[in-house]
Length: 126
Image (cartoon, rainbow, N blue to C red; front, side, top):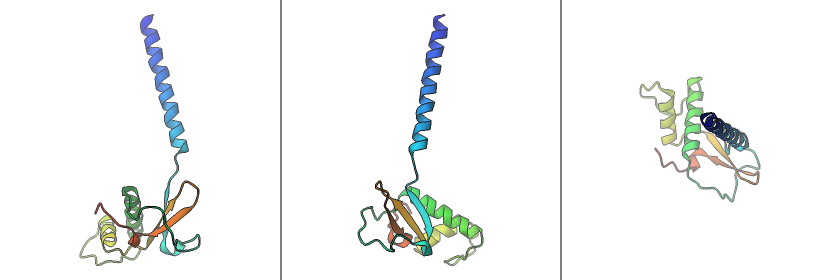
């Protein structure tokens, strides 16, 4: 009888944890957006920026993934290939040479956003 009560307590705890996980997932939203260079909106280039000029690892992954997908879908390559066929490596080389024409849109807590061109951001992880 005591064993059954202990098992029920564990099941209740597990359900509570699962409910909390669902709440966290539903409240989180994406804080960045990747745009093409010609999609710059919101009044053009922001004069006063409050976010850091360093690209985060999440922005880096999103930019490289987006550009690699574009390259794999036959988008023109902006660097010399030198026999390279892997879209991700080509995207990394374009990023090293600052030739990716993508804009990172960072959303702020108050609902505003800042647009940063990839060539304006400092990349520490490469």
